[in-house]
Image 1 (cartoon, rainbow, N blue to C red):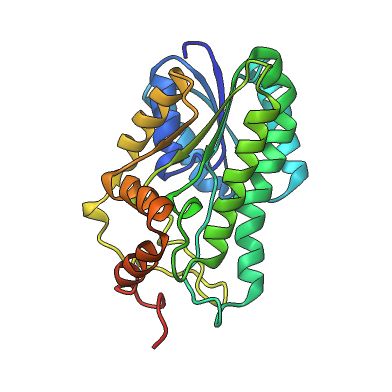
Image 2: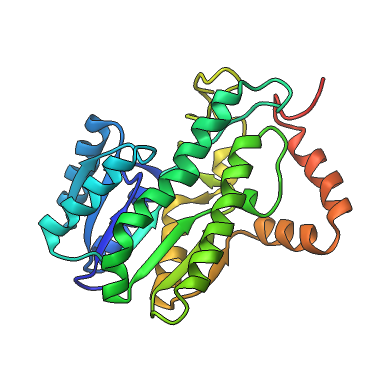
Amino acid sequence: MRDKVVIITGGSSGIGYALAEKFGREGSKILITGRNGEELSKAVAQLAARGVTVVGQQADVSAEAENQAMAERAMREFGRIDILINNAGITMRALFSEVDLAVVKKVMAINFFGVLYATKYCLPEITRNRGSIVGISSIAGYRGLPGRTGYCASKFALNGFLEVLRTELLTTGVHVLTASPGFTASNIRKRALSRDGSAQGESPRNEEDMMSAEEVATHIYRAVVRRKRSIVLTAQGKFAVFLNKWWPALADRMTYRVMAREPLSKRS
């Protein structure tokens, strides 16, 4: 990965930041994006202090024009694009019967359409360089989870898009990776949208028991180097995908029991 140019959307914190640090320490040149300018500047300064060659681009992935500007900035700064990691995302927690549909639309705009926009504007250069496109999906892209209508829908859509892209680009030398972490300790749950679109606040799960963002970044880095097709992380995640494929009715019941422990994930 030395001297490869890597774009990471949503790179200000969590898995995105950990990926920027991992690739950067391996010699890649990094462009990270983030919606919050202050958080983005702080992340860039911290990465630079660790010896990473990095620039930040304030951008909302749900806005098509801002994705075009992101790709153009990478070309101005580094002259090429080798890897795009579609990491930016948001989640939600509310029963479908209670959620404002505007919340679902917002989640889809960021998690799915944001990937389409970023990939569209980076694809010509990545194709030229026979590079990689990575989508940070989720176990929720294989198994529907109660209380996460928009999130699961966006990740199922993402998985389908990446499969189509991988097949269309089969003879081009472009590598497409679907990376599905299990529950990861990050700030995504704290920023989750509730049924009316307000921020959830505190995480409903014990973050200390989860895989760290740094561990996830290491797995994804290795998968890019080895040009793997897909990875599913954590034993719980692998079991959920396996069970849902072969015993879906049992998976329904087990998923309900596990997720029902969270507030707002089952009917009262």
